[in-house]
Length: 241
Ligand SMILES: NC(=O)c1ccc[n+]([C@@H]2O[C@H](COP(=O)([O-])OP(=O)(O)OC[C@H]3O[C@@H](n4cnc5c(N)ncnc54)[C@H](OP(=O)(O)O)[C@@H]3O)[C@@H](O)[C@H]2O)c1
Image (cartoon, rainbow, N blue to C red; front, side, top):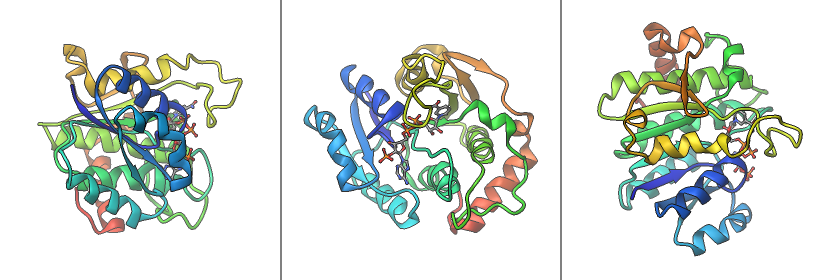
């Protein structure tokens, strides 16, 4: 059994993944944005999950969460699930927080990043990006960046299994009630990548949809673009990978 941290687990796909992994006997660390939102995680905490609280638009919160987790039993896996669709929080939550946690967390050997088919519409350029969240950010760009981060981590950390998942357009608060894809398939791939010993799950550098590997945006595996992204994120945060 593994110790697995799921970010953004108070709702949607993160919550479903945490519940399913907990029911399968894994040791969960769940995450809520605020103390008020932590109430939504009471049943998981009662079932034995640990909880961390932090607003991922606030870099101090992300760094504190990493410190808290590094002071406890090491994690086996992280599912970088927290995300927002629009507004100024897009870059801070969708790429800065997973980058900082990837750089700061000690030794999880499986990393799963929530991507989206929207990443195909992202621009492979950091020009003019407002990482700090003073202006609304592009969801498409943020998902291209986090998918590229996944591939860079797979290249630079050969001892880590790093993968990204497109969960499909599924009916959560973000996806909306009429989203057409299957909500169960929408969280199972990230659970499998975080915990399974199936040889197909023990691979790295993949972009996945419903249990199968797909070809991501061509820039994802472009080493020069990966390096530019990592340089921009390190310059912005002051933290190198
Ligand atoms: N649903 C889809 O169709 C779809 C499609 C492609 C990709 N995705 C990706 O899948 C992931 C999960 O999406 P979802 O559909 O489950 O969305 P959701 O239902 O809106 O849940 C998002 C989660 O992220 C958390 N979060 C948002 N802002 C945060 C912040 N500032 N600090 C900390 N946590 C924050 C939310 O916490 P609160 O509840 O407290 O706000 C919530 O737990 C996202 O990365 C999303 O981009 C979803």
